[in-house]
Length: 136
Image (cartoon, rainbow, N blue to C red; front, side, top):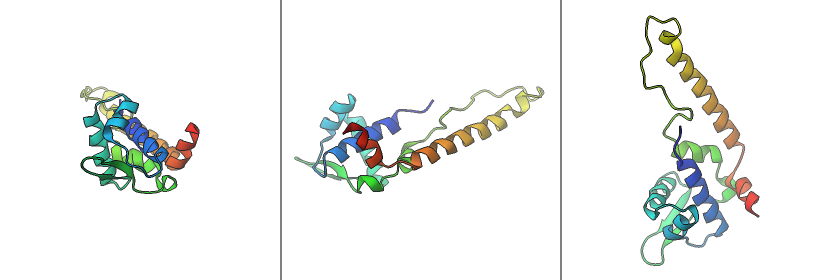
């Protein structure tokens, strides 16, 4: 199954939106998420690379949204952090002489691809601003 990167990134983005442009430290973010600040900084680097977040380094530094929350599409966030198929992948090589085994991976890949497309389509209909409203 997929890692927790999307949920961590969405948590970070929601906290940054709530901060309304104020600098937020990775320690504060990590405390809210209840993870190590190193993992937060890793996700912030990726979110910055994709243009969602900007940061100020050094003492008194922190992160802030690089865009308006209404311009951050959750489908784009998912694509920026996802590196696995949502349903996983089979690691075994089925028996090529079996009528099911010789075709199963091909059909599973199609099934997984269709599911991921549906997920991204659903997420793409929502913005960070939409998601953040749930906390008001």
